[in-house]
Each structure stands twice: as C-alpha cells, then as structure tokens.
Length: 286
Image 1 (cartoon, rainbow, N blue to C red):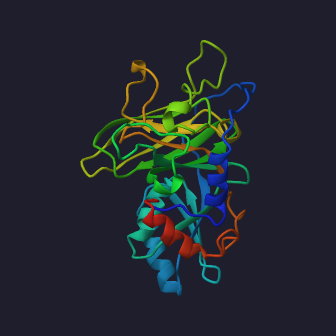
Image 2: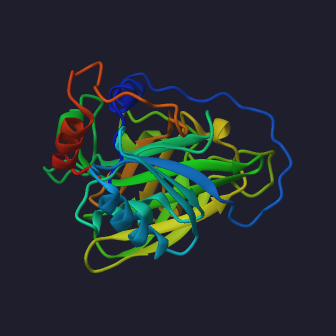
Image 3: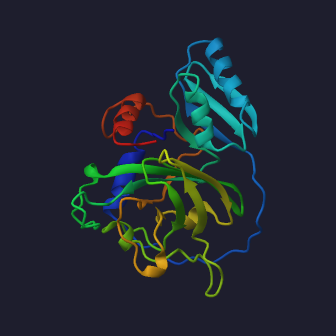
C-alpha cells in the first residue's frame, strides 16, 4: 500500500518541525451514518486498453466499487465507491502495477497521517527533541476523507509491529517534540462530559505484523487538522504514553482532493512522482 504526493512530505515534515496546539473550536451536532461513496484518483502506469481492463477487473472484484475510469494519457485512474483506498491500492498492485494515491473526495475534505516510530534503538523508550526524523521508521498510514457534513472515513493500516490489539486515537495536540509523550490526552472535540471524539477504536494486528481498520466517525476534517494520531498497545490508565517499539504517531495534515493535485515533479527535490515513491518505500512508507 502506498501514499505519495509531490510536495506533500516536504509540507508534512515542516508541520512536524513547527508543532502547534489547535485552538478550541465550537462543537456541532452530528448523527452517525452508514458509509458513503466517494471518489479517489490514483496514478497507475497503464499503456493500453488491456492494462485498463486488467486493473478494472481486479477492482470490480472488491465490494463497494461502482465506477472505474482511466486516463491513459495522464496515467490516472478514477475510482468511485465505498471501498477503502488501501484495499484499492492492494487490488491494483495485485495486477503487477504500482499505485499512488493522488487525491480523495472534494477539495479540503481529505487528510493523511504518516505513522512513525519514535522508539530509540538504545532501549530507553524515549524520544528527545533532537530526534532525527531521517532515522524514524514508518510503521503505518491513516487516510481520511470527509464524505458528508457529519461523517469522516478513516482508512488505517499498520505494518511491522508486534501482534496484538491496538488502540487508535486522535490526540489533543500535534506536538511531536517527544513523540507520543507530548501529544497530550485523547482529543475531546466536545463539551465536558461528552464521550471523546478522538477515540477511534481498537483493531487486531496479526502474526505477520499487519493490521488495518476502516472506520466512519462523526467529525469533520477541519476539526482534526494539526492534531496527532497515535496507535498503540499501551494502557493509558498507567500514565503518559511512552515511545515503545509498538507505538506509532504522526501529525494529521491536509491532503489533496480529487483533481487538486496535478504535479508530477516534486518542487522541493526535483524528483518525479515515481522517484519519490521509490525513496519513501525504502523508508517504510506503505
């Protein structure tokens, strides 16, 4: 599975270097709803109609796919439905082709969090403010897209962690100065006494070190931008989160909507979309 947008990682790293604590915003009423269809665009290397057919056939085998359209000239694939973007990427890669997500939903309705380990190899289980981002391992990815005025879908994946039950949360702050330890409590997102919006749920990671969850939650994208996401096996009742080997964290940053991103060369590195992909996969990007 893979997520790569030209300039996105540069902007994401800048956000990490300048953490902030999102200001409180007024709460809004909501109603829990079922999954909504949405559109996602991927860059996929395709050279002919046969390529399009191979990819389309693989995608239609997934539940929830309602429409697949290809643009051979620009090497883009548009997919509509309710299937998780991670499942779509897996289905495309099953045909022997790469896939890079270029955008989801309408403008200003999508976000992403690259989940990294802040655990130090010396075994101290801490992360100092001088922690070098180049040494961190990517262990997961969360894609988020708002599909209605009150509902956001979250496509969460983990790889390379120990088997077991994991708890996914959005935190009150986006400060990663000391990794998970500086992200604060679970984001409340509402008035005192109400259930915390930031608790996303629990899911299982198998013996192969992989796990995933596909959730719908009653909040809007604008509410969570700049907050941190933490996925961990830790029991928070024991105190502040530690940076252990199976705790991953990332800042939630806005990402492109469908057709918002037409760049094929990264302005900060000069590398093509696919060169950026290769570099990020080597770092553990899904």
